[in-house]
Length: 137
Image 1: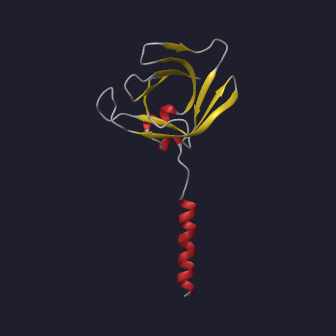
Image 2: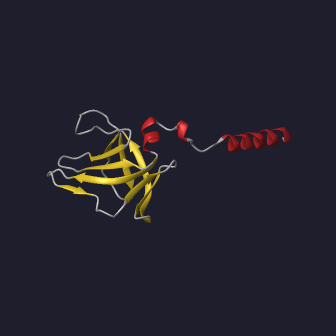
Image 3: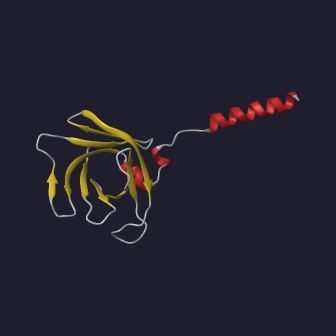
């Protein structure tokens, strides 16, 4: 009976110590590119109306490794929560595309496009809006 207890204890300890958090290297490419701080630049509504960043006001969103995000305005923390990355059918291409949903703020995912220094979040609905952010270095 004692050998079974030792074996069980060893298995539990091995299992507990072999678990580790995700590192950036283990994340999918889209999530690696998303990590970091982004500054709001403008939003274009489906109607064509464009809202630009208010001069002197810095709206930021920071995507962190544990799928947590934090929004802030002029350094004052605002909305925060978790985000989920999925691949729904895009209304733009008709194919699966990378999308992000910010919880608890959104129910509809935003299609994600990331270029070197720009983040595009487009609502995956007809006449939705597209917001553009620039990477903070």
